[in-house]
Length: 121
Image (cartoon, rainbow, N blue to C red; front, side, top):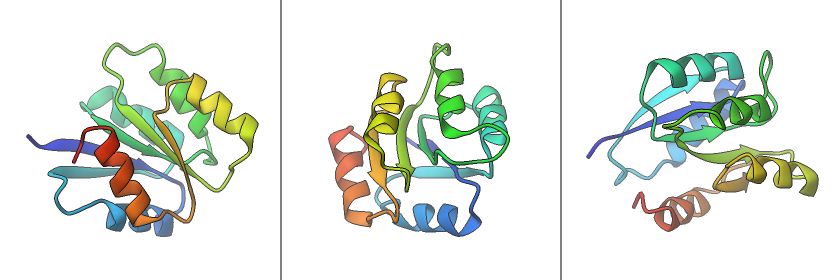
């Protein structure tokens, strides 16, 4: 079964880093969004199963994307990948439905373990 993954981050370098960290054994089609507004547009137009989401983005931030998803019946699983690792921010994103909160720079093994724990590998 092919999985559609959306990587949303305003930094092209960070998006590339996250895409490279996705394990090759994950049968995935990867899409990209450079800000939260683009992410919401893609989430409303395409069936996305997994969202790898940065928090600090222009136009709509990651919290705004999570708030949008909280009202959606077919919301994807969300893994937040952020350098903003404040406990209060973690609490907020987890309360909005994020499955995990991973620290930037992303550790490839940590992402693989997270995907395994969530049943994707």
